[in-house]
Image 1 (spheres, rainbow, N blue to C red):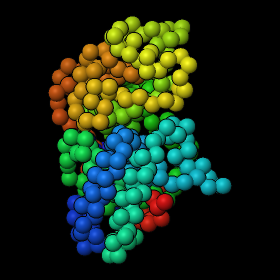
Image 2: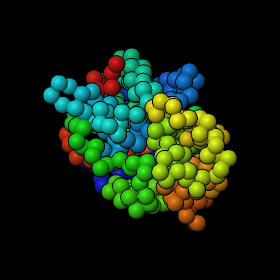
Image 3: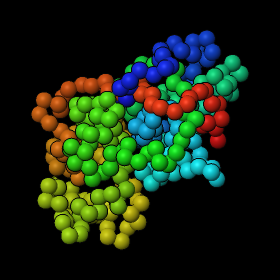
Image 4: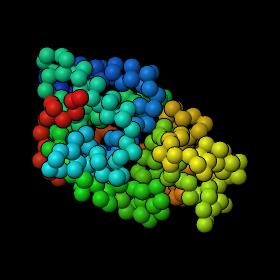
Length: 293
């Protein structure tokens, strides 16, 4: 799963981009990710989600890593990004520090490429496929809160709304369904689905009754809405097809996902993703300080 660019970027991506400058960069990042995932398994979903949120706003340029300043509120502080888990950011920062610890690599590898590699490694470490990542992304120098508006899918989006957001990134409905598999290692905050359990339109009759009872036990009425629970309660840290099996069994946390699955799409394999990385507007360059601690 790798976000494919809808348009060609100025930078030409290739697998051997760092062959001369930092030939061991992939093994360095992989080693950091292996240790990080072993220490904190939630790093898997956190990294995948961080990459998705980065790529859907001005392309895969690590601009989601940029900190806000007194004069500018950056992407990471947009309401839609406040729930991005710290383990994803930490994985990129640790990987960048390890790469820069090698003298010949220092300042040569973009944070955007590190995030792309870290996502691939997180998926592989969770039992998912390992795939080649083409490199050469430049880090975005612009990161604004306003740039996030309307770019990311919301938990309550229906199928038409989801298709529209993905189409804006050059992705089809089939790509959208394939990329939804990332939820198999993700977390959901109780507040995002509480309305399906209690309230004017609750309980949601499309939910499996036993599963609804499980959700109510995990997220009782008095719980902090920020409490995070596994999107896939069966294999929460395994990158597999259990997410889709849950949808077919009417066991889903969010609302519209069930309608994302369509006959003929369920068993198709797609490479819609991280290898190429889309490149949007805004100035870019290698910025060693971007994802430093």
